[in-house]
Structure formats: structure tokens, C-alpha cells
Image (cartoon, rainbow, N blue to C red; front, side, top):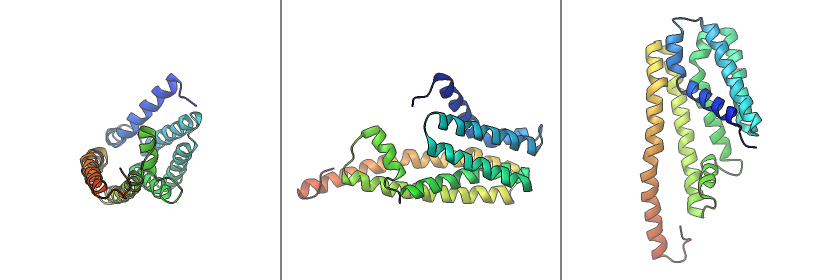
Length: 201
């Protein structure tokens, strides 16, 4: 099912809000109560789930609904803790999705690669599996640091890490992987040429 123009615009706006979330919380706490911010966050998460469900992406919709339930449950104890733990919940959810994909047929990175390139050879399939594992490790580490900032640091430090540093680290991993992939691929191709029995890349 394709997305309509309003759905695309809504998804883009919600994605931007999600990226800017730590900064919005930092400034929002000086104006609104933590509970009101939490309510707005839950509404945004549910809307994101509805957009995914409307486009037929049930797995993504289910993930956001789970996040909404966790936020709601955490908010019963403390709205402030719940809104500061949102990045932790997101990283944990991504780690779980990527990790489970390693045991459910097709790793997440392989799915992305097939959307772009179609068929993949044995080397590419093995590489995407390893890269999926690397992303799992990253999300676990990122979620751990995010949890530490939520529990033991000031709102300024929490905003700095979750609103800037974590995105820089994601960018470094995403961009830095490209030359590494090219180097490893070229090395594999040379070995394949030297050994005709080995599957070509």
C-alpha cells in the first residue's frame, strides 16, 4: 500500500519531531509540565504507529505501539523519568528488532540492501548479517549511555548526548561503514579472482 501525500507529510513531520525530541524537551520543560510533555509524546508515538499501520507496515506500527505502552506505564511512576527514558526505549526497541531479525530468516540490513540492490550474492548476505550485528551492538551501547544520562546527569548533559552526540555517532557508523565495505569487497573480489572455485562477488 502506498502512502498518500498527507501521510507522507505527517510521517516526515513526526520524524523531524522525533529527531529534535531532546531539544524540544529541554526547552519545553521551562514552559510545560513533564506530564503534559509525556502526553504529547505518547500522542505523537501513537500517530506514528497509525501512519505505519495505514501504509501496511505492521511490524513498525507494533513497535511504536509497544513504545507508547512502555511510556504510559513508566509515566504512572514518574512523567519526568518517562520522557527522559524515551531515547533509551527507542534504542532498546531498535536493538531488539535488529537482533531478532538475525534469527528470523533475513537480517535487517539485508532487507534494506535488497530494497536497493535486489539480489545479493553469498558474500553480501554474510556481510549484511555481520553489519546487522554491529548495529545491534551500537543500539545496546547507545541505549546504555542514554540510560546513564537519564538517571545520573543534568538535563543539559542528557540533551547534549541524546540530541547531538548520539546522532553524530550514528552518522559516523553509517558513513564510515561505506569505505570499509568497499575495501572488504575489493579484497574479496581479488581473492575470488585468484581462486576461481570461490563464489564471485
